[in-house]
Length: 537
Image: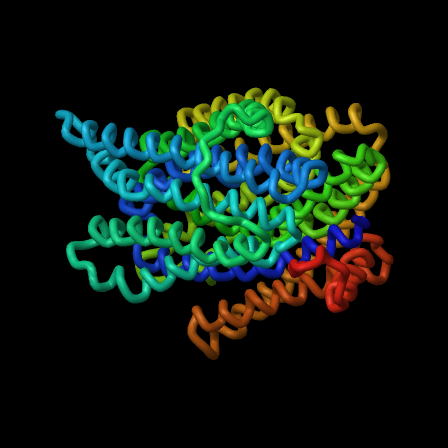
């Protein structure tokens, strides 16, 4: 697959991901208006980390990354029937293991809640975690289905699936949560039940597409199959790495809840959501597309093509993520005021969340590194290297977070935790890039750095233009309309003008990355050859 086809597929995934992120933003706005940065919301954030841990292990993370290259290799060399037989066996074994984990988890939390001297915060977190834990059954199967559909280049079906969680969540906030009386503590339980229902919806949505490409339901627990063993062998190190990483995320939430304040997990969560919005539009989309593409190159031993796809993807990501990082850093408070400050989300919540966002924002320029490098290691069926590097950086992150929570001043502690995440992710991405550089051969590092420097210069011009508009327009509008309406007009205008300045400078100075994106958009409008019997995206 040509590099520009990769970008074209990434734009397809990015379009649906943008829809999902937009719906996610609506979801978070509505959630913030109801729960703000309360203990109820922070408890929900902490409780939701547990099913996300298992989703990373057995769904979108380790299992999908280990399964996809083996599935594609089996399909290429042994045919469709062998590939689907492998899929059935993996699904049967994983589902059986998850059922046991969920049952034991619910039993353990029930016993914990009945013990004496349970803290107030544990009483708030554990009931929500107990409700949401079965979510892993649905979402892990849904994530495995997404991996299969991606291997058939059916990116649109899998890319739309995450949006279903947001749609279900929004409907619940609008129509079900208001019906629950008894305050935020009872209303947040309705939201937890909504998450469980959304997982079932995400799985059910993909079943028709799976049937079209050849899936047939069945139970096959033959764990002795060499290909099944290969999948779990590849999954093991990656699962260990992701487990440590996700446990670290959970520990971060507990650190924020117990050492910083009841508001801290919520403030960090809302800031993270804004960071994930631009990251998910292209970074996650490109990573999704790169894995099957790089797996195909690796299977054919086309390492020059692999290297070209990696460096091309990295240049495009830096071109897009750099202005997003600078923009969120400069406009952190106005953006939070515009998006979230309503009803239960008060000015204090805005202050706390904006401070976290300003420290997270520079991380967009380093978060994208792993999105490109990790799929390359997985395509080479090397899941151990990211784990080894990840173990070191996770402990670095945990250490920095504890130091921030213990030694920084109040209302700076959570900002220090955000910066710790950025530092750790930067070390992780750069280390992986250096190892991949030694393995695949020389990347054009000077070209990548030169492209990033140009993007950074244009982003500074963008930020200056946006600030001038915002500071000049908001006071003037405030004399004629309400403050909320003034923000609603001024902030989007500032962002729009800033984007126009950035892409205008990129066009004037002929940035290659802009040309690649424009070519991909034009090619996206034309029909492309796909596998017979399957749609492209």
